[in-house]
Length: 421
Image 1 (tube, rainbow, N blue to C red):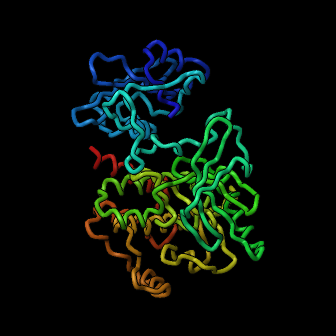
Image 2: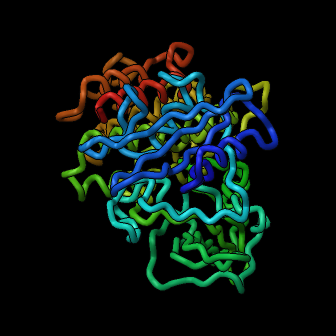
Image 3: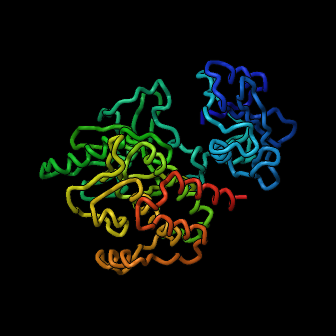
C-alpha cells in the first residue's frame, strides 16, 4: 500500500506530490491530525500542478467516504473505486505517489479495517482484507529484493504436511529466506519417478507463464528451484480452493461471494489486457488468501497470444474440463479471452451455489447437447438476479456477442459497491 503515507501534514503531502513527475491524478492518502479518538484521513490529489485535499471521514457504522461520496468498508476499496471514475473528485486516481524509502508508516489505527486499538493485532487470517496480507504486493516490490527466476535450495525450508497433490506431484508449505525478510510460500514439487520429460516441460511451461504476470489477484511465482526435485515456489493462499471453502462455509454472505468473484474478474481483466488466455478457469483454480481475498491459480493450460492474435487454436482434444468450456472450444478448438469469459460464468455459478458441481449428474456429451439446444443452467438458490443475468451474458453462444472482461468487471464492481452501501 505505497499510497498510504501515515501521519504527515498537509504541507508535507503537497511537497511529496509536487516532487518528481507531476502527473495529473497522482495521489496519496495521509492520516489527519485529530483531536480525540476519531481517526480521519485525507485523499491528496494532484491536478494541473495543484494539490486538492479531500477529507475522508468514518461514520458511526464504520463506513468511509469523502463528503457526500459513496461509502466504503476500507481505504483500499475507496482507492479502487476512484481509480475507475472521478465520482465527485476532479479526476480519477492514476498514479501512486510512493513513500520516501526512509519512511516508516505506523498508523494510529489500521487504515484497512479500522480497529480502534492503538496497538494493531495481527489480522485474523480468515477476515483480513487484501491489503492487510503479505501477498497483495509482489515479494519483489522492495527494490532491494533483487528479482530472480531461480531460488537457491539453501534459502528454502519445506514443512511437513501436504497442501495438495495432483498428477505432477505434491504442494507443500515452505519458508523462503529473502534478502531482507522471510516469506511463507507454497512449493509445487515435481514427482517424476519415471523421468518423464513431458511432465517436467509442462511444469516449466506453467512457470514461464506465471513469471510474466504480476497482479494482486493472480498467484505470483517467486522462482524455480532445481534440487532433489524440480520445485515451483509460489505465493501461499492459505484457505485453499474457493469451491471447497464455500462448501464448508455456507454462512458466507452473498456480498462476500460477490466481492470474491469481482476480484477474480479483476485478475482476468488483467490477463485479457496482457493477451493471456487461462483455459482452465474454475472455482477449483481460485485460491483464497483470506475470506475476503481471492487469487487465480493453475496456469498449466494458459497461453500467451501474439499481439496480432485474439485466439489460440489447440492441436487436438486433451483431458479438458468440458463443463467449463465455451462452444467454440469444443467445436473448433479455439480459445480466447471470450472463452475464458464463458468459463467465468460457470465459476460464478459455482460460487453462488456454494461450491456445487455444475451440470451435476450430466456427462460431457450431454452438456454439449444442452448448450447447443440453447439451454443453460438455472440460477442457484438465492442467487441475486443481477448476478444470474451476468452469468447468462457470459454464456452467450457466439464469442463475438459475448462481453469481454472489460465489460464484466465494471458490472460486478458497480453491483458490489451498490450492495455495500
